Image (cartoon, rainbow, N blue to C red):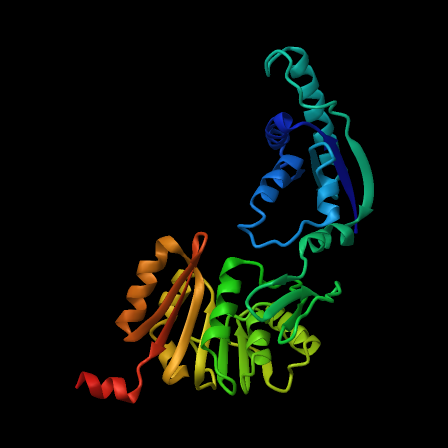
Length: 328
């Protein structure tokens, strides 16, 4: 399908002014490219764990701030033009103060194919190290820096959640690496792109079942499992832990939401052998206490709580027969 792309060069001062004016004309979605944002990210390079900044990103810093609108309706192109004409008049009237500079307000309009638009995010998904031994890379990029003992996971998330870059996913992978033993049986509840399913398989699990209630996610996960050559030990199926899943194993991992995890806590034990490990994330730190309480109520023992930014990951265990005897 064809679409219109409208680029408006501006200044850092003009970004808010122009986007607000566009919104007043019903244009709610726009993309902003601002070198100032990139400079701020570069200052935090160490905090984000980046080893280098790509040349393509540095080149972006030389460009003026830009607002881009995509639409498949010519009427919205006209709306953008009207908004910019109004701004030109308001600048002339001094509404934004003497000497206000929001750029020349001369849009560049191009017609393209929406496949370019839909795949634009791929430019920003690069290979990265998610844990001590695991590297995640997009399927469309090469990665030649794998060291001895490194495990490389190839992912194309498509329309499913899970590139591994999000704090919740990376914490789950790190806890998998820490708590999973070779030969374990693992259930990935809410598998999304299949990244945790694949990570468990590549870490040496004997059997991994990824389930999701979304057919698209299951389809994406199956393709990623095939692409990573772990189909002998891993599979993805349509399913919900609230229903009867044919599974009993050493570990359940669930990267969902605090509410879903709390609701699951009453049923998850039936999928775990005694001493089995339950790894959960997708939990905002402000909801950590509520999740911990839900896990304690079903007598899952908390083994570890870790945090990254505003997110946390909780590891708990099902009691062993020895633990139960100790309580008697």
